[in-house]
Amino acid sequence: MKYIIAIIQPDRMDDVLERLTQKEIHLVTVSNVMGRGRQKGVAEVYRSHKEAGSLLKKVKLEIAVNEAFVPAAVEAITAGGRTGQIGDGKIFILDLGECIRIRTGEVGSVAIG
Ligand SMILES: Nc1ncnc2c1ncn2[C@@H]1O[C@H](COP(=O)(O)OP(=O)(O)OP(=O)(O)O)[C@@H](O)[C@H]1O
Ligand SMILES: [Mg+2]
Image 1 (cartoon, rainbow, N blue to C red):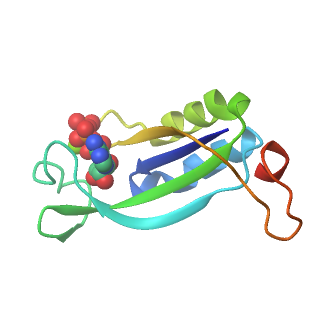
Image 2 (cartoon, rainbow, N blue to C red):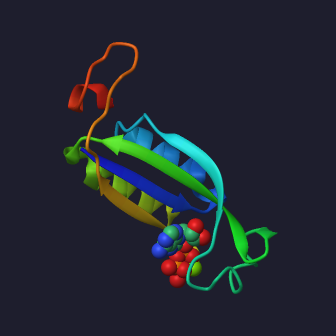
């Protein structure tokens, strides 16, 4: 199991979610976050509203998936998130130790989706 964390531009979220849905990836956590990349928020202000100091508004997606879904998730996020401009975002992929559905007590791959 893997835990995918993606930071994307807020205006790309609808497209990314649509592409994830097309690939049968439905379960997702979405947060409004602030962040900065290697331009330290400076050169990118023309794209995003500057929130506080050097921080810009971003959207964070978190998706827990079985290993087989990782390529599809990465494709959906890159295809929906890429404009070619600085600040398009980043995808982090972590090993996921366990997943437990609280309602049923199911664990592991069955509990993920
Ligand atoms: N190494 C990192 N650690 C934590 N968060 C990061 C990291 N790199 C990027 N982020 C998050 O992703 C957001 C978007 O990053 P961004 O796309 O600007 O990365 P970048 O490395 O500067 O690439 P680019 O040159 O394409 O802009 C940042 O605002 C931050 O929230
Ligand atoms: Mg950047």
